Image 1 (cartoon, helix red, strand yellow):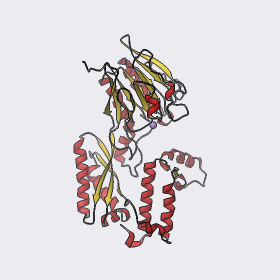
Image 2: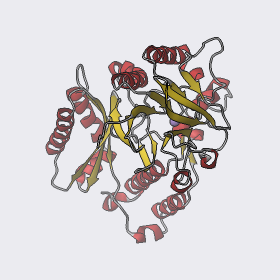
Image 3: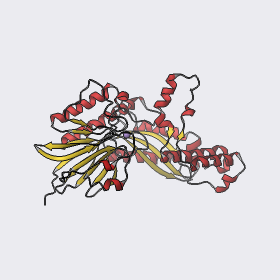
Image 4: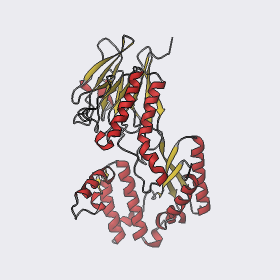
Length: 418
Ligand SMILES: [Mn+2]
């Protein structure tokens, strides 16, 4: 039995050309250009890989570019990449997401004929032909209002031709499985995620380039190879040029500063030895106990150690930029502290109320500068909204844990500090 694929395609989404990586307090001058270029370089690799693998088609599952934020460069870049694919006779099927509805594209800049954009609010279908033979039915829709993919609007090909559904949004397993569609090319999640695999597959390819500290690990696109039985096999192809990494370290009472720095240096050396090309943005997460942890939290030791790590690994040709060192709070504090009639008790009970609730925390009022009423200031707040609205449950929990820990340090006196 032959296992050679009968066709192959690249599935990518969330290129977000308009959005450079963010979420760092200090960006060194010599890393700025690398950050700004990262989304374009990663996207270029997606199209390079499509060409190298001689794919039959490319599917883009939304959030490719908000051209109003990216400026002319974003749309020109895409047109150039699409032309490259046109020269290789590779068609592109593009379903819009949150930032790239099909009606939002600069007037007067024509897309090449090999690009098929799906309308919003209804499923459109195309038959993709290669060398005169139909190889796939592509059913797609650009996101309308709902966040969820409307699975029931998609249908498999009546004659059993390979069917690829392209959509941007959230999705549950059962409704998608029930449609009997070979491959769901999904967009809207920035890290690659497989909803289900096997005879049929539903998969988010993730963004080709991570944007912020929580998006750790490799990012890329998906190469899908379809075997003669119509089974899609997915293969992750890394395309990122900057990689966020979180390194954890546990210390105790006996860890002194020299040993601590040595351990962090070791971590970075191991990371760099594992990949000779990649640039890393590293956040350190320090667990455990002892005076060093307290010094990291309260005495600015984190800044001193960061400075030394950056000098050694982040200058000149250095490929690892140390973003932060976070002294992680203990898993729990004694329950009796929460019952105290003290400032600390009041504070802990107050934070616990926030921890028990689930609604997003809006940090924008804390940016200040509002009362002079400058339009510029409110635009700035709007631009910063994705960082000031704390709606990711993981980030929300983490920050509140740190708030508790800081409160204990400040209000708890010496005997309660770590
Ligand atoms: Mn997105």
